[in-house]
Length: 360
Image 1 (cartoon, rainbow, N blue to C red):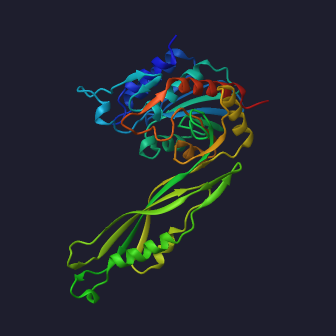
Image 2: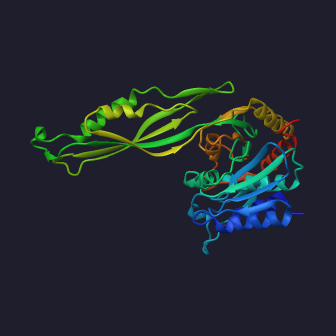
Image 3: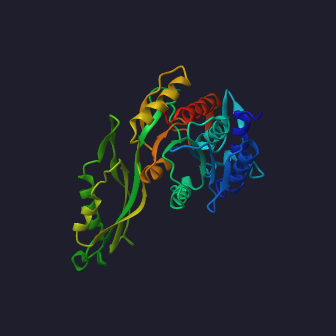
């Protein structure tokens, strides 16, 4: 019988930063060989499997794409470098999030579900959740989901918590238009940089969005992060652009459109990754019970700062929580790794939830 460490090792070794096809094929083949589930890979590359029956469906959700590896994570032949030491597996994608994809695969195989159980591993999460969005557009709509992104180490080091909410991200651009002139005659033109700085003053004075989810306060943020304007030291600039990073919370957005009250200033949204809030307190408690039973420590409901595919699912009507092995600051690093003990813990949590939810 295949072990979780070996399955994790196999998944992490498959290159999937430029093309997810090989990783998707591996997952598809494994599920068909090791389960009697209804397994498919859609036109986008998402792998989805279903078993069991019931009025409600529970999905175990992950993604098998990764960000580009650091040069130290690739050998001379272009293969991913994998190393296991001190109970941790090192390699690109180990933490984010092939370890928990493997955990979900084994939990899906072994669970005797209380209702319909779905396994889903999406493509394109690192490109803004394009695979998840496409699946939703095609009708993917589980009632509940446990998303295997990182939730370990939030309440205390080493504790695998249950995230009941996470922030989203809205990236936008403020564009100020003016009129060029020679810098020796500034009144002959209209300085786009001055208009842009007026817009930045508006951004600076905005209140940060905030809300409460299951008793947990969530605070967003708004910040100007880049500025690009001007063409030469002696030319009044005719254009200036300012990038704004906004960390959003459920049902709240900062009123950035106020900058358009300034002459010559426009505002556009470039990316809007939705936040997530679990709307079913009973489901959140049941998952916390499973997390408590799976470890000696006492996990808590927490709020996660990073956007995940749970945001897209929640926006479409799925009640989500996030439970995963990755720790804060672990993903996307040159020494990315995951604790194999914690990956096994997550497998335990997933299987417990699958067999106990929904309760009769």
